[in-house]
Image (cartoon, rainbow, N blue to C red; front, side, top):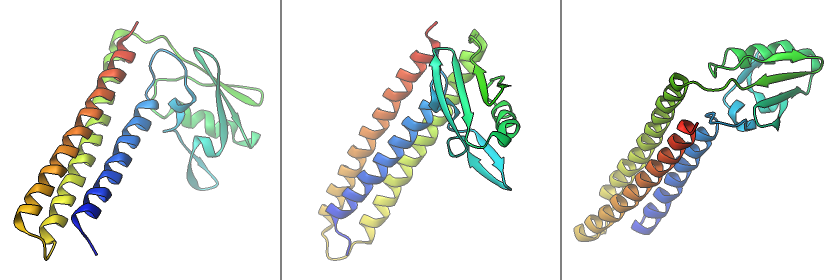
Length: 184
């Protein structure tokens, strides 16, 4: 049975997920120093299926400008190296024995601007998710039976306020990430 409090609670939970997803996506975008999360988006084709890198290897950053990828199955070294190279992250991995070193090139102004564009795109995806859940909540509120029109209008205003809060949070994340990327 749906009710206004349930719809609001449900919407907040979905918005939290959208915000967390945006934060996670931002963590995969490289700024000045190495972070194992930078390789979270890398997909490796092993045994006929696409797998995320963290399912087939451990990633560590022993130095600020180097990532070390250690495959669980040493026979997959070449496939993992190829996946990192083709992931469009601007990285040039090199296999050394049983591990892969991924040095981070210093970023030039153009690369920083390109990354800012990517971050803007990810932020927009987060905003779209927030808008989607606002629309979903409005639809569910309109379908409620046995609830007064005034209560629905008030609930819609609450949904809009929550929506605006989450949009502001995404914008704040975007500003912080942009500043981090542009920092020389």
